[in-house]
Image (cartoon, rainbow, N blue to C red):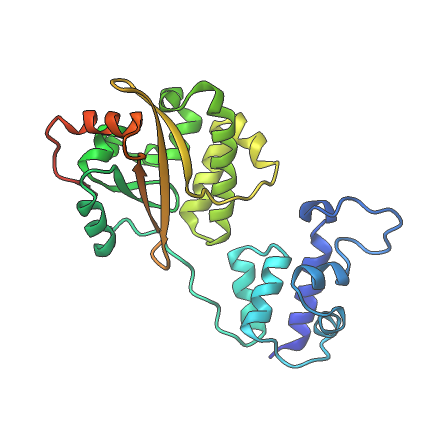
Length: 279
């Protein structure tokens, strides 16, 4: 291990990270630039003494778990994280990829949920499979090309895409989408993620402003109110299940038995549907 290279890199990255970037706020009478060692140690859940010895090249090689904690604490990019691992004589972890090939198990689930709208999406919000009920409820997502494949891109660049949500929910939905994209971006160092974020910054002032709020929250399961042109407003339970290691999500919509929404879904199911969309 190159202890000196590791120590220098840690000191440089700590000096480059400002307290307000991690929610600590500005501090007066600071004698050093950036974060203090104790700040990084606390963020990385390790002792200040151990972190100090790493920065002073006075300890043995850190474990991959320690390196991962430090990378997160210092907000390293994927390239910086890989460099950190290499100067510590560790193999960098594989970078997750966003696959557009539907996992067979997820396809079987989508096909089997005939009465409930179900679709498979990438973590960036591209729909890669839908059953007929999902097409009836949400529209056929296979028509989109380019950046329009991504639901968040459509949300911030095409006002018509918001018609499925009540106007009073638009701001909350916007913030949720930005916070989710920020959370997903940490997974990766994926070039497509970085490119999409840059494009949205350039195309949408609303996105750029909300991105600066630094909110991070993965979209979870919960109640969704959707507006359909034929059946009106539906109150549905949205379940989001993540397939670990695949970068894909199974999204389903269900209604309480006997509810108005259940009757609305039955109404949507009456026209004969096509085979699930696969791309």
